[in-house]
Amino acid sequence: MDTLTANQAKTQFGDLLLRVQRAPVQISRNGKPAAVMISHEEYESYERLKQQVLQSRARQAREDIAAGNLADGEAFFDELEAGVHD
Image (cartoon, rainbow, N blue to C red; front, side):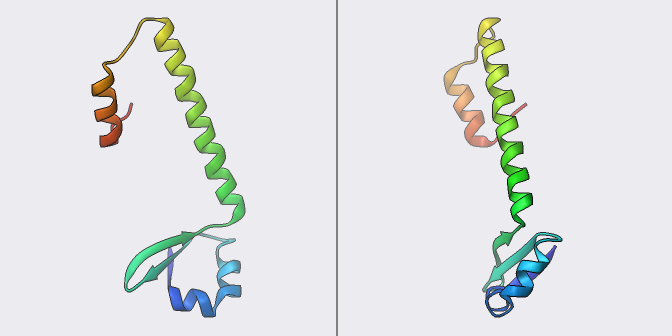
């Protein structure tokens, strides 16, 4: 992934817009990653994917409830906070 400093992104904004149409571009500030710019098309693709994942998880939850496959609430939230998932 290409990386630009925040100052480069500001002074080369037109070029940056063209570059993100081809691939994501990381913007760094004070030597640390601060943001990633992506094309609108790629953003919409991510949003569709997130929606599909949420819909799939909701379907699975309904099926689990119907089948009596219930989880301990405390353990569920512990795993959620830890980023653990199936």
